[in-house]
Image (cartoon, rainbow, N blue to C red; front, side, top):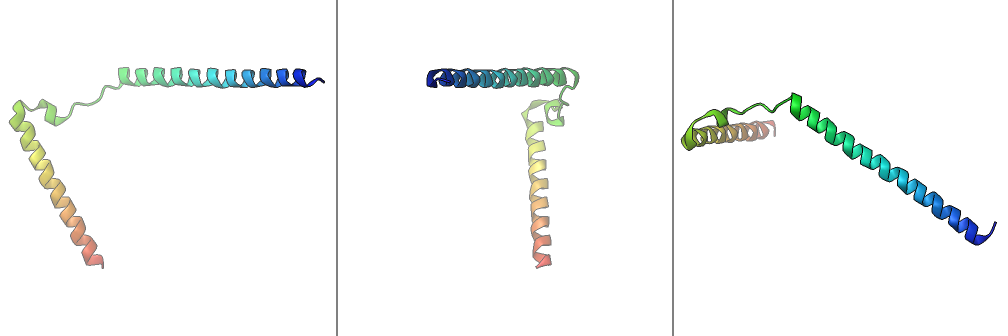
Length: 85
């Protein structure tokens, strides 16, 4: 075998391999996109309670209540951690 012939076959093999990888990845992207569209169509995201409240005062009150719950949970966790030591 000549060096040029061997180089040409190596180049052909490289292009064939890269072509298969490119086609596979393209099909993978298309399949993932289709699955995402199907899931979004049949399973709509649930509405949160904050979006149903009228005006900004309702959502601000909800945020303050959630903030107080978070602070209470963090405080309880810190106290529990200190008791274990």
